Amino acid sequence: MTEAVEKKPNRPARLMHSIGDGLIRIPKEHIGFGKQIFMLARQDLIKTYKGAVIGPFWAVMKPLFQLFVYWFAFTIGIKGGANRTVTEFHIPFFIFIMVGFLPWCFMSDCVSRGSRCIRENRQFVNKISFPVSAIMTYTTIAKLYIHLLLFSFAYLYLVIVGYYPSVYNLQLFGYAALMFIFYLALTWSLAPMSAFSKDFESFITTIMSGLFWLSGICFDSYALDNALINKVMLFNPMTYFINGYRKSLIYHQWFFEGFYHPDYENLIFLCEFVFVVGIGIFNYNRLRKTLPDVL
Image (tube, rainbow, N blue to C red; front, side, top):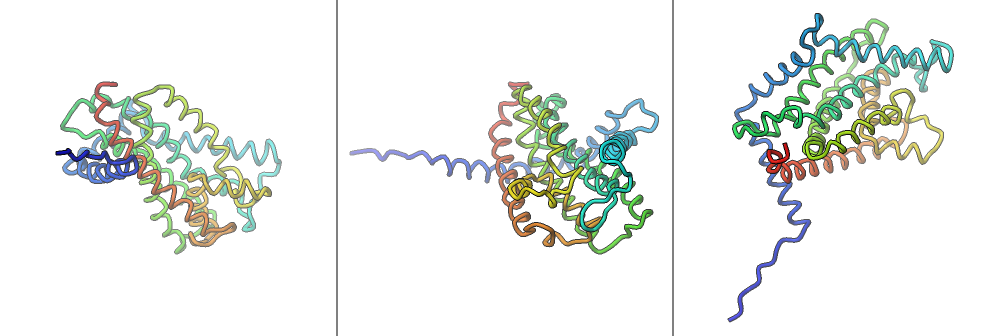
């Protein structure tokens, strides 16, 4: 009598099973920890700016100073003419880079700080009662607080200079929510991998310093002369959010409108969104059990 040989599931099947398991596990881990997550997000801000007189407002002062430096360099130092405008809407250059700088600050902080969050909060990893995935969540929420504070100042300035509230501003709720989920899911991959390798953490820092100049913050990604580069820019999710904020605040366009194949732009981001969430769940589910041994 021959015994039936049990076949192991193939790799795609194991991948889908792991993603499905993680998709249930991560929200389940957060149940009952909502109050602690928001409390830790608030304490993270307090700890970061402890001892400073103006506290978290330093989180606004730093990007404002950077913004002034870029404005001065590009409008007075390099190009000349502080009243230079960009795009067919004749947007003043300072307004143009300010709006692009808003999502960049959040995305940059999420990636740089999110990649280190497990290593910096290793005391929670060995606590069985506190889920590791919540570390990434409260770190991202802390960055969201700063983003909302910075956005409030920027929005007030836009209103003062004549960019009044409009129905297009409502898109910001969608863009901000997608941006939060996208970069939270990205930390599900980056944080565990950085915990395993400091070289990977250094690699992330190096990449981020270059992405600033490649994401369309200081130039109009829709107006590039090279058609190939125009298409390549569509694959940068940071550029997607930067242009999304500009559409909502200063271009007065809907997300399905635009200069260059908006349908492609949204479709490409949708594919990237699904991929980042899927691979983030898979990596977290695969590495979470070995984190206590590594740290």
